[in-house]
Length: 237
Image 1 (cartoon, rainbow, N blue to C red):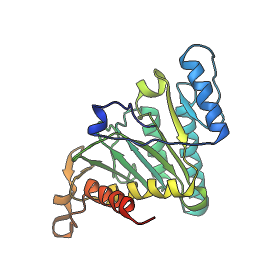
Image 2: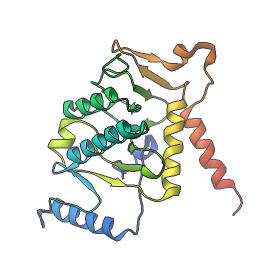
Image 3: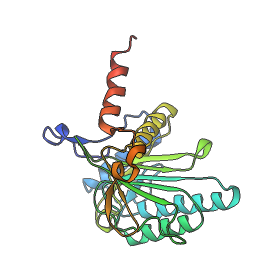
């Protein structure tokens, strides 16, 4: 899962959870639990990316793979949705990816030390923040398109404290319907022009609605996703 579930935060936080019968993933979770309780000193996992042992390196590898794929084919994409991006090592990797031409969309609720949309430096990077009825708390990492898609959810923000000083985990989402749902969430948030803010090259956050002017559609992330969920629950069968 992407958050800490309790009666208070559940009223206002938006998080994601994964229920799975994948045996390798289940074994990883068991091993991680044994680490947390002090029973084991596991450092490698089958499917989980776990900090502080391997999470940053795993993400850097995925970024580098996307750079190589884009250089070879002209395709590829990176989408990251987190609460904060302040880790200098990861930011440097995202700059490298942008300079290689990889399209990058970042949805960052809070702190962001990355400077987007600077010609020749980070011009393919767009940073959005969605602030509305609920507190966006889920973390989604998306690399590639089509058959190459690698999608992960988990607890880790791109901060040194998360990557170096805490035990955090990212889990792969492999089932097509689940990836489709995550893709829908990401698309809606990137299309939102009512509750979203855009980080500009000068470091200022500006309302997307004001930047678009008459071209704004009024799309609201929370109204849209709640409407979709409500419709699916009310559908017969």
